[in-house]
Image (cartoon, rainbow, N blue to C red; front, side, top):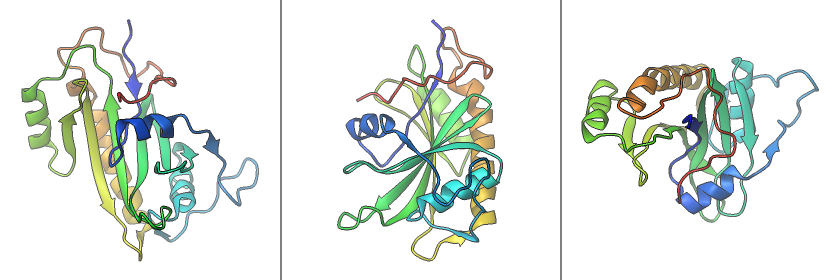
Length: 197
């Protein structure tokens, strides 16, 4: 059985994520057919469509999934078969579309649980991201970017995204070390796999 990369996010429960991953993609607003929207000058977690526009303008293949009920909106990015998510997090309970943090997240689906030693080594090597093992023993990599109300300059956000995705690419071999039938990055990501509940 070929193991494939799966999507995952944080700041949400497993059930909420399962629901979020079932959402239908939403097209970017104010986007002419065949043309990416222009990138805004600043990024906030509240303006998900601005985040999407910036990501697409930077050349990434990205899809936006709108918030449903209590679930967070998120953007899915596919870079050479490595699927990562950007969650709009730290959202106000009274105003669920007002969010203050972008959570970059990647999960790898293993056959056997990742070892404590591999998790510890990953956290030592990558000081600005968090790596841990979920309830199924799969490694989860995350990095939070605080935007608050004022936002951050788009180039700063894109530099952070590029750095995160580079770390995620580098982590691929570690994520599957000692696993049976580890996939290659040429394998396509699973499109029907969601997080464990």
